[in-house]
Amino acid sequence: MDTKIKILDELSLSNVIDKEAELIPLMTEEDEERLNAEEMPNTLAILPLRNTVLFPGVVIPITVGRDKSIKLIKEANDGSKIIGVVAQKDAQVEDPQVDDLNVTGTVAKILRVFRMPDGNTTVIIQGQKRFDIQEFTQEEPYFKAVVSSFHETKPSKGDKEFAALVESVKDVALQIIKDSPNIPSEASFAIKNIESDSFW
Image 1: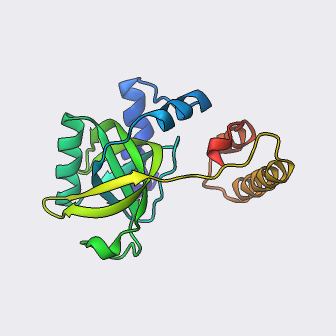
Image 2: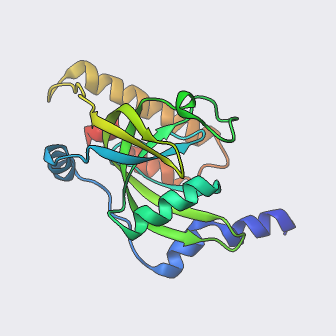
């Protein structure tokens, strides 16, 4: 076996999660309604992400390497476990400033934090609801901002045009999975079984 592939396999997140033997909860429509009814903190610690956008209801692993990000995750994980996540405008920027960040992000809950064998920290986060940044109140040791709820417009139940669009997106996603040797076949099963509008 190629050494690089072996190392990647040993470091894979699934191996770590399997050892921990704990399931990560996904949000149901009821969970989403409950979260939307909850008060959002006025101020959030803001974690910039490169090449990643977190959506409500989605669980993703992220690798944090910047000192600012590691400090933010450590403090949040020891506290409320709630942070704000925003995408950087340019993934190439190593030390993003306020102007390098998008102003709409997602409230995230830290589910697990892993110290990986290669020294990196991997964090499992779950998106909860969207927010808009009103103003940044802190830049060091990490970003903090005053935030407000983002008003989302959703299609009404039984909207035929939306249902057709969802089916079209599913078809394209299934074709991409079929044509991509690196995407596991289980992904197509997951796509076919998505029923909640939250994922679209």
